[in-house]
Amino acid sequence: MAKIKGTIVVAEERCKGCEVCISACPCDVLALSEKVNGKGYHYAMMAQPDSCTGCASCAIICPDSCIVVYRQKVE
Image 1 (cartoon, rainbow, N blue to C red):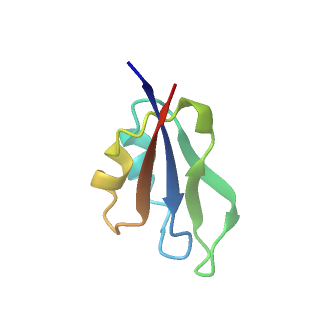
Image 2: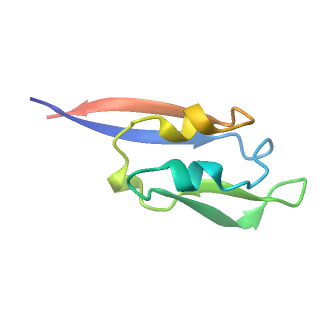
Image 3: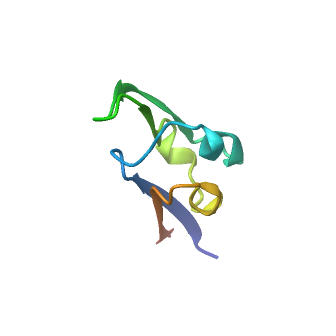
């Protein structure tokens, strides 16, 4: 059975850094960036990209729909 590798794309300018996605991630993939967006918020980013399984918990719980999850089969 093939493993699934996930990756996310965060709409950095829409993210307000509420950290809801960070606490919802079962694999501790997400963290807040040291950089800020145009509104002055630290936005979410993948801190541990190799740990992402593509479960989409972060995208489902994001109140501003800032996260898109992509999944890829890895042999």
